[in-house]
Image 1 (cartoon, rainbow, N blue to C red):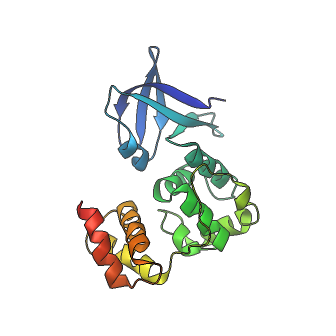
Image 2 (cartoon, rainbow, N blue to C red):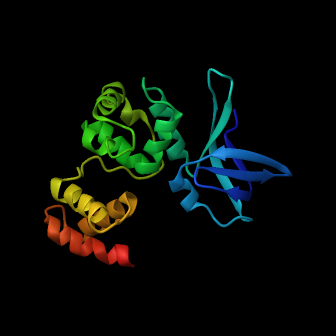
Length: 200
């Protein structure tokens, strides 16, 4: 198993990069979110990898900028109906802690933010993983006691659908706004505060 690859970033596209390791170029499938986190071409990168071989013997290396991202990818693949493409979408749309919180709480709505992840698959993921999701040890901080309330969820959707923010950008901005205003903050106040972070 190839645990990680460290080398020079030789090329990057929307969902695929090439890392040069001592003159050998490794093609690695990544999410668009991962690409945005990478340094410029020519810089050194380290990606934690997952080796996958399908039924047709096609070999694919999937890459992640954190061990937590790879852990979520791996645990998602244990669910019937979740293949590498959907698992990659999960890592791209939800942070590892967001995924863990959603499964722990049975929050299908959060899981359904992931492209191509419908209600039925969300319920299957929750049923399959909820019992043991806390055994997934993440390096990042996870606060299971802070559910995403309706005002926060609504604020995120308005920022995305009306103001054109990306979902990740909106979630991060609303999370910062909630830290400033408190958990009981209303939707309009969250939006006003979140806009400060998006515009900056």
